[in-house]
Image: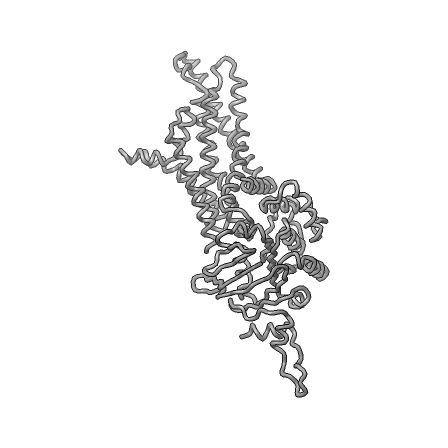
Length: 261
Length: 248
């Protein structure tokens, strides 16, 4: 565990010494804020319209969670597809390219320490990026005087879902980084794999029967949405955990295989 | 201290190291010579546990590299061919990280970093970012890293490459000062360096050991023909021996 933390600290040191962490934070908050303002605007429009047409039953159904946060989390998930490869591309490819991996191989640590330490380092950056966007629900809570306010349970669950999604993309991206010594290739393939978990859901609309269920399960979208609706089931958690564990395990194997090659 | 027996490493159809065996006693300094591509770096990587051998075994302090890699790695300081430095970090942060993964306790870490950076003259630029250092400075940081934790065995792959003449002398003195207490295997292309620092010479060529002896022993073995009145022939220089053995 001590070695894992040492590696994680080293990764953080490099993320913050280079622009990478700052670029991720800036882009995440910038694009996130754009989506948030759009959604806030649409909430405002909807409530104005319902008032004008005097539709109290519609007004009652209007809430922050469905109109703003569910969509916001979906959008933040899309941003993760672009940003996670930025974090993972260098993790192992750079060490191989700069030959610094020899230091890790000759140190009295296990390959598992290397893989898990790097994962934790990147995950910390993701956690900070997500925490920065907590400003949105806090702002809504502050301005929502007479309305029901923010459903914090659902919002926090949504964040937990996003965090799991980010972790899954990190694990998969790190695996790709372990297969090459080119950071560009690691970023590109990592991005395509993350994108795949998203666009595969579109195919579900044309599929039928059990195919439809299978494809829907494979897509990250439905699982992420389950979190922000506040109706998480075990299958949603298992989906993300599977991606994380398979990604980490595959990375571990790839690091070992690299030594043998 | 180091026991290499029948070490083989092959990459597909290329045999980089073929049946290399040698022993290094405790406290010895061995010069590891050979032309480029002879298998020096590959052998050193296998001793340090970076690269698993195709066959054969390496034992360090009685522990098999393959069976008990952590025990071996705890006892080895390794300076690879390319100094394994993270260019984004400062020298101090880097040495602190290496001390951590080498298991130097948090109490001893500061003193240990102080010690190795003074020894390798890294203390003057310890606050600087490694990416901004010169080649020779990076090489010294690599050397400092290898000394962290005071390991019994040092494997140094071309430790003086990229250094200026004054620094080469400093590093040579440093290696000499480590003699006795540490067991050192160092590879180099600078033959006078071997003559000045090493007690034993190991020459490999095309993946095979072609000489393993003291310098004196090598000179005797390769001495020119004795003169008519019984005097031994002129002692050849290490350079001549090296060229003779590796040209075959």
